[in-house]
Figure: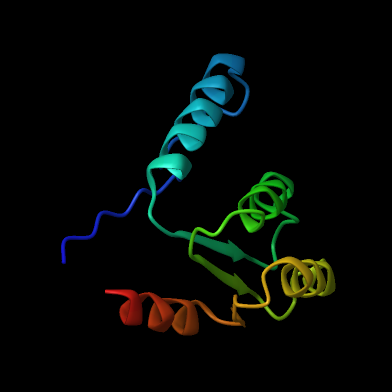
Length: 107
């Protein structure tokens, strides 16, 4: 089965350029809709407010979701509880390696 990965991270994002933010948001909007499954990773270094929003939005669908949370992520309890309430079928994992292992089973 052929799989394509859409990664929203860019090596050089001009955060002070408002047009860059608009482009990024539109790109993510389009490709989240094209994706057949969505992966979320919540690192310890930031709260990821947009990612939290996107997880909430996509949790309301039946699209396959993969959720990973670093054990030191500041809002770990929120991600766990909200996901469990809306999408009890989603198994949250706590390392990038475990998240990758979930994806391998999809392929």
